[in-house]
Image 1 (cartoon, rainbow, N blue to C red):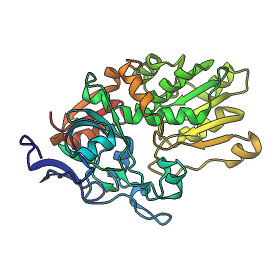
Image 2: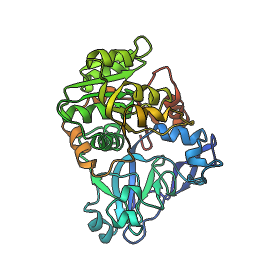
Image 3: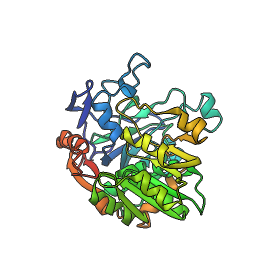
Image 4: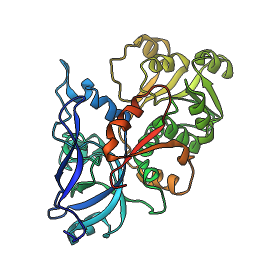
Length: 363
């Protein structure tokens, strides 16, 4: 490796739920076809927080085995500079030393039925940076494996802004799943990082009316600046009644759920019209119970999930590079690696103190 690359570094290591530790570890050495990234920024996702607190999706329960691993470095929303790698790795990823890149969260196996059918984001083994089999970016350096999906990002963006490509690509995929039409009334639940991405993506589809919901006035204002035509504070106003009032009693055509709040699911089912579309993009920390008769007998709804951001990374990066989002106000907090616990706590603060929190490991 290069003369300026150290042999030891600081990294967060997962020892189990609510047991994440900052440790000194070896800087990884890239093998054939691999690259070494010096991490510039890593966003802290709500899923990182739910994994930290032991959600069953990650650590298992009576219905599922554990998926997340101990001994792993977390962090899947990241950007950094390529500082080492052989010709095979550089050519394979279409990059040069010094390039700034972001990687998709998943490291697909390229062998399962999903990968072979081009549905790589649903890869069977489902290896993912920061959770399973590949270390993430809450470290000063990280490996970019041969199977990673790499995208170049402009060096002109601030690191924390460039790292927002990951949640934005996820939101754009959810919007694609909604198949929004020009005459649609679209409702987005939540004005956090994913919700704001949903608003930006839905705005690009140019529906007739785009409505944002949240409990916090400041976040609703950010939703308006991101592209919402109308905002509703659900702590003061009945969103179901208001949406029906705006739609001659029918309800919304599309509901995009990006809050991860359990009540938001039932809210969406109730404010949709018959034959409406519900797209869920959240990781829930607890079980959600709904009246399935609303989905079937009452309304015959089209309910769709969305996972990761397949085929949406170029669009997300272009939106950031073109200044389409009020990104400086979305990326509210940046902390050094030594304060990773503060970053987790900020994301968990339900008072609305932050929007997007990022760690800058080499600041």
